[in-house]
Length: 369
Ligand code: MRU
Image (tube, rainbow, N blue to C red; front, side, top):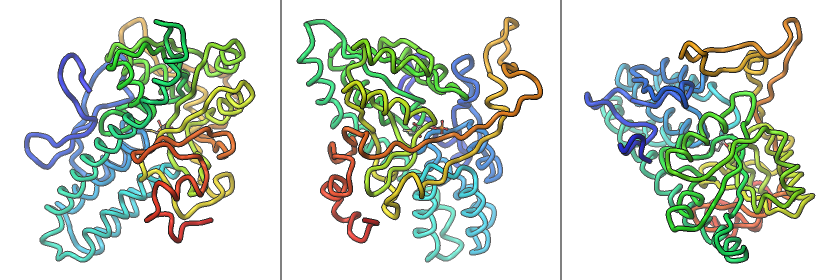
């Protein structure tokens, strides 16, 4: 994607060929700043603090974290320690574990001397593959938007509601939920996006709105509570969200609040789609509500908000009465029965074991039923 006319991915290597550059997403939309990661500890902290976030990008960043660790010490013990440290950074997004599993599989059989170079190559491959997967999700999601556009009066936009940020900032490029929207916009289909602000960290207001604005896609930021009302009034044609972990049976974990949007969509007959690359599918799970670990984040993200102060500085302000406690479950699970379809790199599947197995027969064999 382009920022100020310059093409960016969300992660790339510095000129020295070994340090890892990322966009500091805690500073957007007010400042476009990059952070250069030169150690595994800095990488783990970048994931924990959400300098980088979004399931696919977390996985890609962790892969480079392993490469940074291998540069310093490529012994078996160091490899294991790196994988354990990075796996503990965020529990819900399965892409993290998928990427670390892939690094382990690739590096473990090798002699230590070969590991650093191979680790960098594997991390780069994960990034390149993510770009291709997301582009393909866009191509498979585009006809869904086109079909709705064909049923609307000429010139009327397709109104799409999204939650959190599942755009290019959450991946290496393109995004998942936003990829079909970008392709539709580029194809001349009029689209308008309702952007949930997505408390507590405001990924919608801060990141999705920033992305859509940079690409020229018409959008309106709404409070998290407004979606149901807009659906009741016929002002939402479809919902597209991303996911951090989807079970083999089609249950979907995504940013907290997604489930409420799915309920409202169901009640109002609004199609509710989830866009995901296959590394987001956890083939070992069949019951999302019971089995997907839900991250509990700091209460401070609820009691405080970030924004641009009148002095031009990005700062945190308190919004909750001092002394009140706050809880911060970061994700929820939407049961498969509320999901109209899963938009993957291989096509759109019903959210069910059979639907996913049809698209991914080689993975579904032996998956949890
Ligand atoms: O806490 P975050 O910002 O990492 O949560 C991100 C989401 O919930 C996204 O919707 C999800 O990772 C899909 S991203 C393509």
